[in-house]
Length: 135
Image 1 (cartoon, helix red, strand yellow):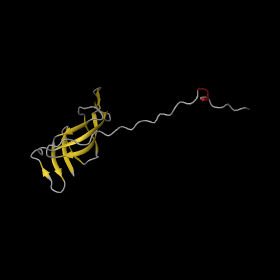
Image 2 (tube, rainbow, N blue to C red):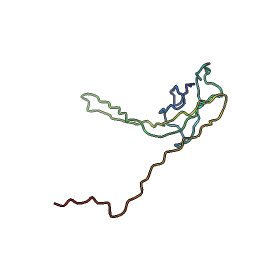
Image 3 (cartoon, rainbow, N blue to C red):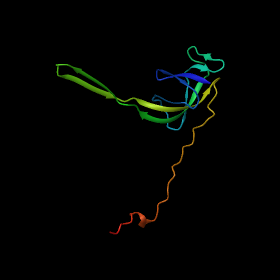
């Protein structure tokens, strides 16, 4: 099953476990957000929205907030001693689609647990230096 959603003025075709980058949306990292503007539910019998499918939504886990690549707009007017340089970076949210919901259901899948880092125990105090070679 797939869905076509609209967010941030763009449309995305999504299936469960997709990871996608969209324009920044509100929410804390690790929480589940619901995207309500579903334009199409696909599968054996596709359902088209007019303009959206009533009661349908897409649940997604918020993975990360980051900034996109730097875009530079440089304008120069020849022989006029005039130039302008401007740049910007888009704010991006990275999502993982957890499930596609229909008929006003609520998400059943919670956020995935984070992997814990393995911390090695510190060794004895005197062993930090490398052995010296005798010549």
